Image 1 (spheres, rainbow, N blue to C red):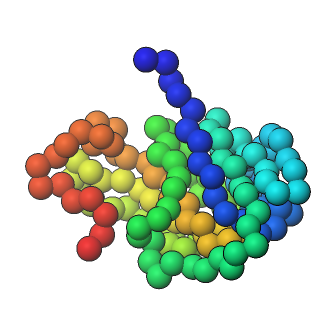
Image 2: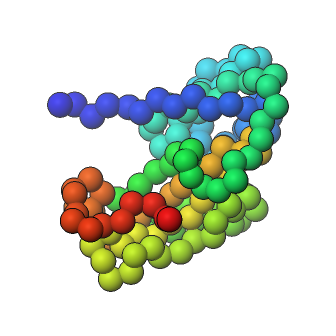
Image 3: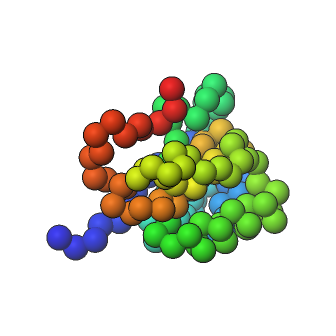
Length: 142
C-alpha cells in the first residue's frame, strides 16, 4: 500500500491568527486560501482551517479531542519543541516523559492554537509500541 496523506479539518475564526500560529509559529506552509478557509501543509499532511461564525470554546482537558504528530526521530521532536518555545506558542501541557521504563515510554507536549484546537507532539522511545498491542499497556491518562 502506498503511503497516504492525512486530511484534517479544524475550526478557526481568523485566518491571520491561524497563519501566525501555524505558519510563523510551527513552520507550516500555506496551500490554497480563501476568505473562508486556508489549507496548511502540516508536515506533509493536509490541515484545512475553516472559518466558522460559531463561538469556539476550550475543552476542559486534553481529552477527548486533539491531533498531532508522532516523530520517528527524537531530534525532530526536540526541534519542534524548541520552535514552539521560541515563538511563544501556548503550551496546554509542557514537555514530559510518559510511562518511563515501559515499552510505551514516550516524550510529549501539547499546544493550544488561538481557536482552542489542541495539538500533541510525541516521540516514542520504542517505535514498535506506536501501534502494537501490549497487554496491560495504558492508553491515555485516567
